[in-house]
Image (cartoon, rainbow, N blue to C red; front, side):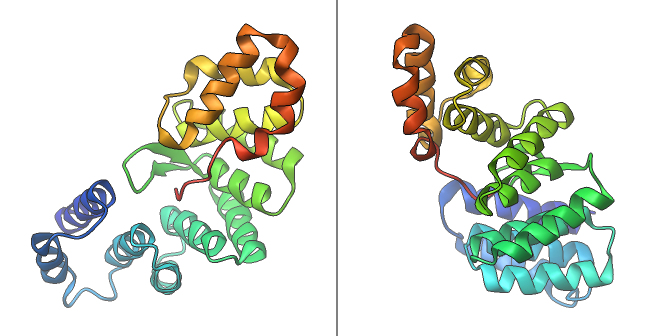
Length: 215
């Protein structure tokens, strides 16, 4: 567990600073050597490559982790993320659906340590496969499993706006933590809350209001 925890620390530091320090690279190499068949190390390595946006290698590592331990739900979640980011939309949806089928209420941390869950991964997969109504349902389920999932909250608010469900979108405003990725969305929600007459025009541009980050 110490090995896995140390690798997780590397991942968080890498995501936070945008690159690997020399010390992190050495620590990662020291911890990984001789443990190439440890599913937890493969999971951590896969997540690290998601952070580095090396999605083909992440897919390879995470697939191997799942072959060794099919019950490693977090590996399945990050595999779906990697497939979606690689443009393998049908494969990503299939993997996300498999995750929810086997572990519908599973939760885990994003690469930055934020809480998220399997239903959010499914929501992303459905959204990217243009199945918007099903994506909304998945994000709604996600917030029942993990009420603090900021990605699910922001994506759901954006889709509510797109769908013309302005009151439902505004109802999520107080739950959103404003960051760079969702600043335009938060501004639109505040505008809709303060001036309902602008709701139709806001709904028309909602798809562009929230950039989809890598989980």
